[in-house]
Length: 276
Image 1 (cartoon, helix red, strand yellow):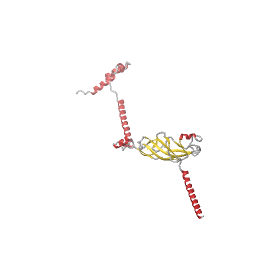
Image 2: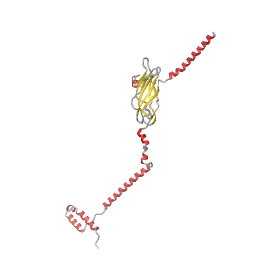
Image 3: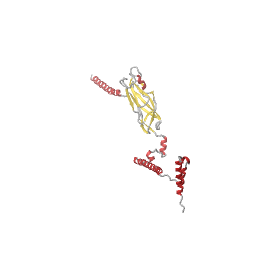
Image 4: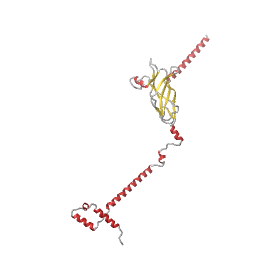
């Protein structure tokens, strides 16, 4: 009788322990994410700056989950998608579903950069529906219209998967130029590092002063030429001019160039030295 009692107590303790263990595992199963990133690779492993490379993602879906994959990735500060991606089913343990997604990516800065992230929308599969990946565009046909609102599509959930980083190499031409000592220089090194606003203002002011002095010099010469008295004619030329004017004939009309000839003659006579 005592032996049966002992066995009954041991069975009760074992059953209680199993129930406690199942109760502890139930929250963990409920809190498991519907989708997670298992691994990723990029080819080539060290792409050059501006080179488009393939980013391969291995994504695992929980059992009974329908996942909607986008055409492009969420851009990062120094890397972004370079075109639409593709995905296909792969082998997965137990009832899970593995999806191999491939996206073209381009790096925008040399060195270690953060890769774009993957945003996957998921929902539980309904009765009689096959779980697995879908195109994000097909989500527009569900619910009451093209919406990503969980109130429109029951159980809809957004999952953002952070992928990691990659090493972007500088361009080969840039590396060769750096090895040869040909490094790009800023404008201050080309024009001189001592340029300032005051120096530029002084140069502009100097050009304005030179232009003003030139304008004053030309204006003074023109004013002097306008105020210079005309050359006086000889008494004979004046008498001839008066006689022609009294007769109603202009000297310039009657003898074209006569006054200019007389002026030049007077200047030539004045410049000749006097006889001793």
